[in-house]
Length: 389
View 1 (cartoon, one colour):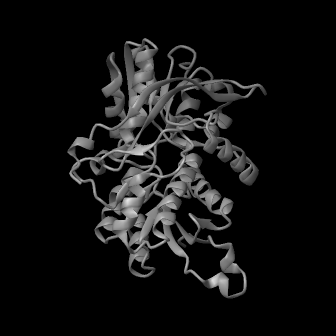
View 2 (cartoon, rainbow, N blue to C red; view 1 turned 120 degrees about the horizontal axis):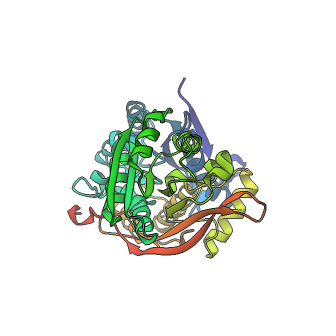
View 3 (cartoon, rainbow, N blue to C red; view 1 turned 90 degrees about the horizontal axis):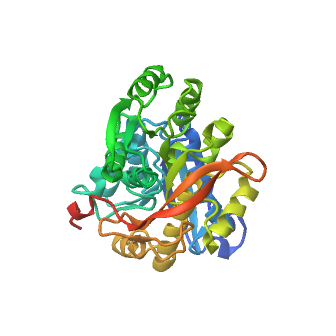
């Protein structure tokens, strides 16, 4: 049975009286991954997005909204079917939510070609950032390569000379290794593409041990990352070969699962809970109060995506059928991001700062991510020049 959650964003729509129905809610289609090892990623995106709605009393930018959430189960075909149904049956003109790039590759072209707008809270595959960019396609998070470029820069700053690199064999995995190599100034001691559904990494551990690199870079999001790091520790490699990863491979859910096994790992990231800006200081405690579970970059990305969409709905008065006006409003990025400085490049992907984080013991003795230094300033992606909008 397919999973569909309909969140009535307008509290007023549930009340009585003529004013409650003065404006028809804008329907936002959220196609995301809610089940399987990566299910918590989509749940955090959904809940971060919904948090903004709740903080606005059920609106975004003063406009009543209805969020329709469906589970793609990390299946591109299923995501495609959901989007097609929302486009044709529900006449949805505004979409978001996709976690994984293989699903985005199946869904986004259909959405934008149908005249709807898609705003990504996570996946930013390289092909859609370059020659296949589209005027109706915006990415609120990052271009895939960027998070791994930050890890490559962090490894370079730390002085490592030989890196062993691993990632799943799909678009985001390919982008991750390309991004790391682009900013890592040392040599590649070995490179492996794993399976997207892989849980046993014994063969990879043996190859890492044999190569004996200075550092390991691996990209395995969600449950894959937990499995990889546990086996890295069990293989006796954690204390011998340091690891530098991107934010997708270490989040607070993974930290809670791994405990002290994650201590000392360096991370390239666009955001952290300790960022000192007003938007972040409002977001972090609001998440903790609302959900009482670990906060992740996916939580932050869902939240910022909602803030971005809210800014466009406010500017247009909720007229999502006027796609030209919505595009113009989104492009202005007129909101205060939890990450600090944010603007769109020519390909409608972020230009933003990147940071090195480190897993250290917190005041309570549990591992936490602490920001060490800024490593890239006003950083854009390598594909923007190929985009002709």
